Amino acid sequence: MGAGGSGGGGRAARALRLLLLIVFALAAVEYLFGSILDASPLRTYLYQPIYNATLPTIRSREKLAASWPKRVPTTTDLTQNPEVKNSTNITNPILNSNITQIPLANMTGAVMLENTTSLMVTKIIDSIRNQSTTENSDIKRNETELPMCFDEVPGDFGPVPVNKTEVELDWVEKLYPEIQLGGMYTPPNCTARHKVAIIIPFRDRQQHLAVFLRHMHPFLMMQQVEYGIFVVEQAGNSEFNRAKLMNVGFVESQKLKAGGWQCFIFHDIDLLPLDLRNMYSCPRQPRHMSASIDKFHFKLPYEDIFGGVSAMTLEQFTKVNGFSNKYWGWGGEDDDMFYRLKKVGYHIARYKMSIARYAMLDHKKSTANPKRYQLLSQTSKVFQKDGLSTLQYQVVKVTLNHLYTHILANIDEPS
Ligand code: BGC
Image (tube, rainbow, N blue to C red; front, top):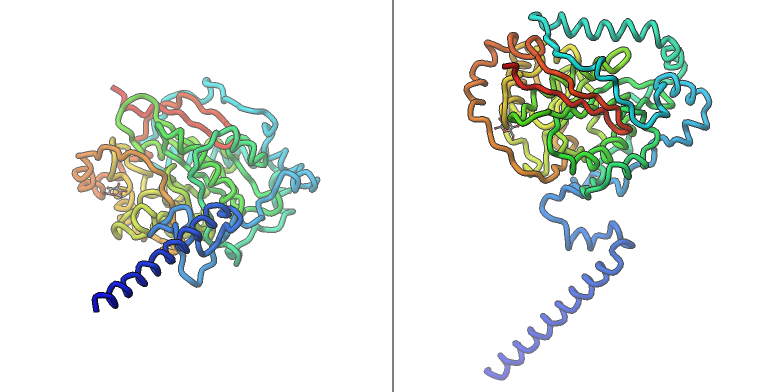
């Protein structure tokens, strides 16, 4: 029995050794030929974490795009089509300059919005509209000659990979020569259905900027939206005020667009969309876009959440008087917006969780604002007296970089 037991033990040990050998051999093959067997099931089994930001976990029916669909229009497309080349020149007369700094004399100055929300905001937008009808009639003619861009999301849109590796901004610039100065883009071969300003509140996240732009430009170009990327940086050392920066981004981006933007997407710089079906447009109801984030295990943290990435039309945003200006420090400002929207009768739209997926870039957590609950308890009573109607700030500098417009603003409360 003793001999039989040791014989059985020997067999088991041999089998175990053989199994280990096979596993090591497979791992070695995967290691050596990993780049060849790029999407191999072996890689998936050996290395896929429970939730993987780089390669989103997907339902079995959904196909994972091995790479980006090859449809982003290139500069060659632009130069080969003389009609399109014309329209590009008209829409962006400064296309060929490297960096434009709008003269400080034009851009600097305290902005005090009048008491009635719509008054000042409407003034800004009206003036831009007038400007566009008088100066840009050629664009209108060209736009009408082009077919409309897609309405139904194309069938091959689905999950896209994310690359979190840090890169240099000038390297990313070389990837996208078709982007116009200030991070603006107009689809060259069709008339966009959506004119979208992407507003990014910003401070001390230089390492995320290039990663964000490398991901977002091809993503938005694929979606055939007309867009501009506006990075609004807080000057000085006061507590970060995300909501106030977004109000500034709203007003300033509107000034910089002939005809004005119709849709505003307020976007944290550390969130990267993982699915092309997540359209960067504004539906009839405000949309909470980043419902399904890897850091939260692709689950909605709570039903009323409106943070991260959210989309509102011009009308929706002005109707609620924009964001509050009073949230200094982390948290609450997005909940405040949720209450505003509810109060005026909107409900929040969301894509399904398999589409509203985002990867979050790593960063340190900021200190929470202890006053946020007190502020939130007042929102529905005071929101018409706190927001765009009371916004005060100074633009320190506006720079049109190749891949984004940089708005540096002093948003400190006047003493
Ligand atoms: C904060 C929000 C934040 C959310 C998710 C809430 O407690 O008030 O501002 O977006 O947590 O982190």
